[in-house]
Image (tube, rainbow, N blue to C red; front, side, top):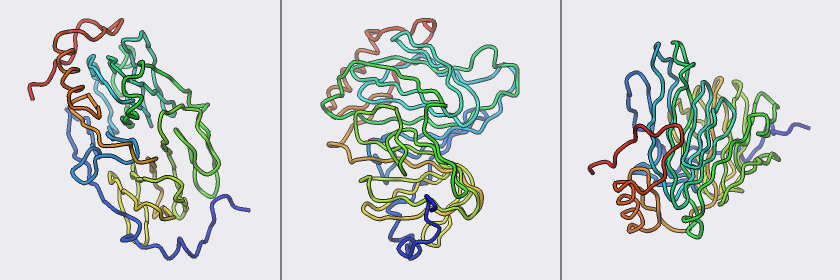
Length: 306
């Protein structure tokens, strides 16, 4: 019996207008040959489940001496999720964590009441030809956990559950989907999955998760007879069982989860349910009251002027 049904009369009758609530075209920025596509937050959708920030960066190939140099900067009230398709980034934070992340692994950093981190290309990876492609996501924390202790957890690629079937390679990075459950611990009902699909393959998405979105990394997908190409975030209507079909070889991610327990304010790298908490974090960073990042103390990103 096929795990992914090849034919389903309900799915086959789906229409894009019924399945897709919002089509978000990310804002794209060229950082010196390094493309970043920001889908969340947007004017159309502030969050999908707990996901409040969605950056797709690359693919990029760096020249000799070049790489990523995200200087130390602070966060509160969220968890950052770094997930790579290609390349390597070295994470360091004020807890003393120092961990390279490579494709398929997960770096999940909970900022809670406050953390500082940097992300850089290692010196021995700057000889030229270094590639980088991946996602940087933020998830909001539940109100009761916004001031939790900061934490960092690395999960190896081999520990992320995966399934190959019916022309699909599915990996469940957080939460549960199609019988796979990730070991990555979350503080809120969360879904994050990656699927690489051969042309003609179909991935059903049921209505178990209150809010869901599909991001097309590469290729084209079909929803209800309409095609969507790369760098598009499709926010799905709640309550509907749908099918994602690969119009050609496609690479997608699925994010979502339960709707958050109230709105969130976001300013720079700070997220909170309370505006006054963000103002306090701004003052703390400006006054140097956040902890330093061991091994990366000579520079930092200053508080923006506005």
